[in-house]
Length: 136
Image (cartoon, rainbow, N blue to C red):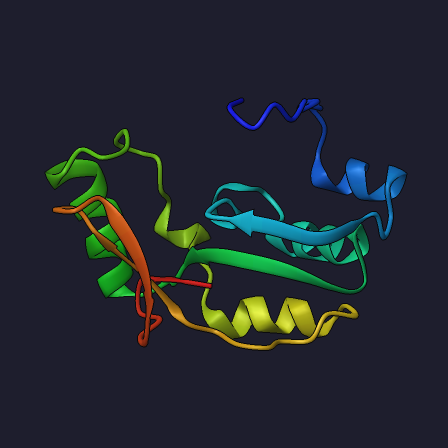
């Protein structure tokens, strides 16, 4: 890496990592992966175990509704071909209330929920109101 920081990669589940390293991190990010795992609730709980008291955890995922299906599956997979066909399963998309329910089962506290909007023309993301598709 340009920064010169050495990175050690470990192949294990977040649940395994949390069991070995509880309360080790100031910040934990879980971005755009909850909709791809078999048990997203377990991942949320593991992230809560990894963060130090007073630390922050950031989640982002895709909402489960028709607009999200249209944008993330039809648009991203079939029209824009940004990701391979079959990458997303709309049944695994997560409504904000579901994610917040899992967060409420932990020691984490919701601070803010906001839309994460992607512009394919500029290849950029921005935070904006509206959690219809991607949100964090």
